[in-house]
Image (cartoon, rainbow, N blue to C red; front, side):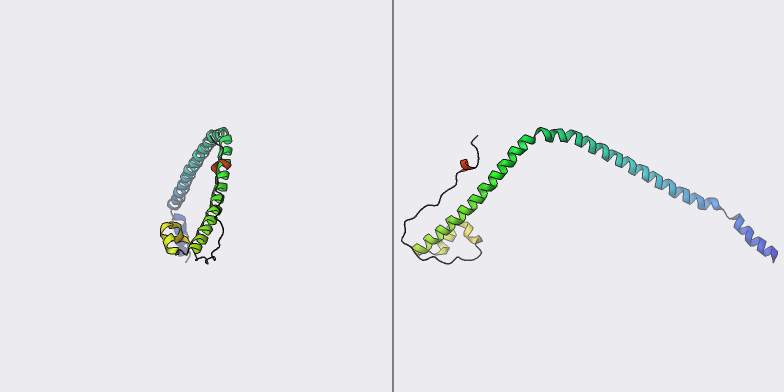
Length: 148
């Protein structure tokens, strides 16, 4: 029995650990290689980012005054669009009133006005009035933009 026990324990001693350790070494080397590649990629990204910042920040600083002018023009354009929208609404109301006063069908003006297809609900007709027509005030671009 002692001989059998010695043979069993001798098999553990004869085991080739070099093959198992070799797999661990390959895995570690592969991981280290990937980490080095990742480190080099991060270094390139940081270098390009720093280069981009050092080139673009001075350019942005140089056109800052022009950007301010552009922002003011965009604000003025937004005001013009808001004014046009309110005046278009007022004009549509005046046209609807005129149609109602003249007894003109909405379909006739609808063929002329392509925007009438986008109306959500028909507006109720306003009873005819016998007043003098007053044209709505029309905007002028000079009110919003300086002439160049």
